[in-house]
Image (cartoon, rainbow, N blue to C red; front, side, top):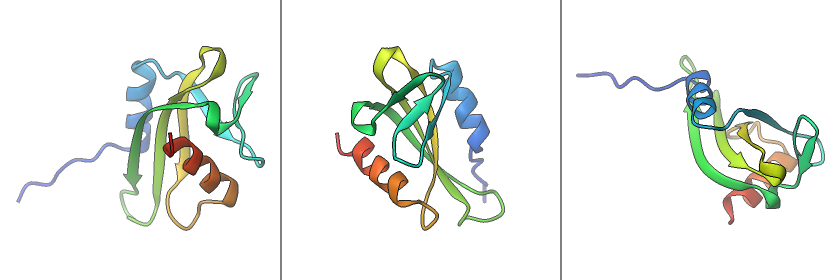
Length: 100
């Protein structure tokens, strides 16, 4: 039986950076997306790709990596936990990002 190799979180982020998504985007406590001096609401973002990654030793250790663009031409990746570790603002942001 062949074992399928899955990309790690960093491999996916590196691939997306090389594909033109260089910024590290983060989600603040109020559910706004931030990178450098640019701050915007999830509703202003355009999602280009979504990847889900499970932990190598623990499948419950999962995250979602979102390649997105926002105002002022910002393009980057947002990493969020997947599953019960997601906070209320993160869940709201994910709903906004995926509902368009």
